[in-house]
Length: 537
Image (cartoon, rainbow, N blue to C red; front, side, top):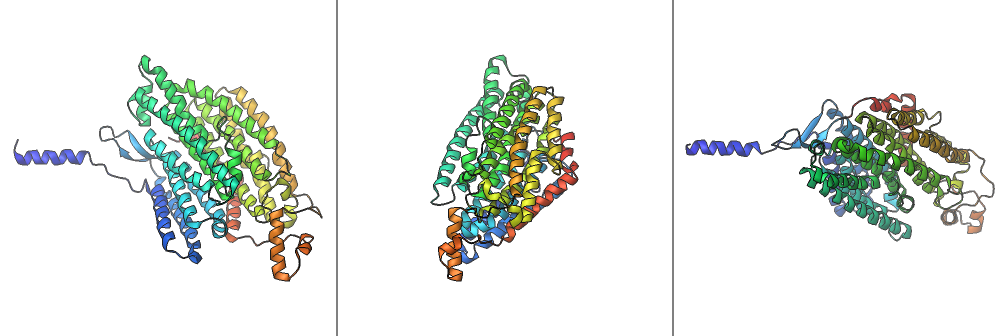
């Protein structure tokens, strides 16, 4: 061989290992992460009076990431594939990826709208927006991940900023305690999951999900116990993110201690991250062990919905933060419903998981809307008790009607048609898979949930009490405001009607957007429900 020929062969061999990157496919998480870095740098140079620009930049970045999903819907795209096996890729954009990315980026956008006033009044703007966008970038990366290493990295990128977001209220004991509980329990779950991933790698010799599925189907007998242990431990980390029992104990205290927009973010985007990861590892990577994770997830689903709904039922209307605690326990119960189709997939086919996606879309819209109204009420009644919502219709009819509609959707009652149809879809998934007992447990829990959702809805439309006392913090704020403006004493304010504060435009927009989306899904439920009847992968 001549020197020239050898040189040409060397160049050809080098070129064969150079991967091309599909920049359009990875654009949504890349844009989100890039805007996060821009916000972090801009925060160093912007004077305090211009800090609100950071929030607008964050909203614009999330909007741009959502728009970039549009050109991706035409075909499946993959990138970061093995040169030795082009079928094994680390990043794939398909129907499942797109719908979950739409959910998490849309949820982050609504959270950003809820946070605009918080960052102007209470929270450090630069840190908040950087952490929120970083977490959203990880959440957008996870549904496209097709190997365990990328899954773990995406999960941690989504989770680590969330710990800081929970504890961002400086000097607040509840916030610090919530962040510590969230961090310690999450780190423990992650450590267990990493141990499981290492066992799976030891048994299969690969991290790519499709390759794992092929090799687990023919794993050597002596490695079968290692493989089964790895599968079980890997599922633990994702079960924690979904707030499934027994990994749910952090939820109520974390939601109460976190800023309300962060609690809304965790209830929707955090759950979407956990469920998308759970679907990927069970349906794509571990179908050979469906007889292991199918029954386990069915039992976990039954326990999760039962404990969550009983916890919500026990909330006293006059207890401090009872409205947020009810939403927290409700989210645990809803996680049980979301687990049912995944468990059913262990008994039949991967088509069942589409019911989880359909239900998640409904849940995301109405739960974000409920938190948005709770943020509105908290502006005048910071203790956020269920009793504080009494007479909301008389004071703010639009907020009361929208919250009532959101609660009816969560309960599965008309006119919340999408909630009813989504629950029927989940029921069907359980029955079709032969899990009749799980459908019965779900029916029992739906009845429990009806009581506490309807009880809260009824409070909205009751006449306000004449001598109802406002929370201490709200009274003190009203006293100082009225005293400064009108020269009156605090006693006069305490006996007067509470001051009605103007609603910030971003908060109004968040409530309106979630209300419009919930109404649209109830009028045209097929927008979400068609995912239950198609193959997502």
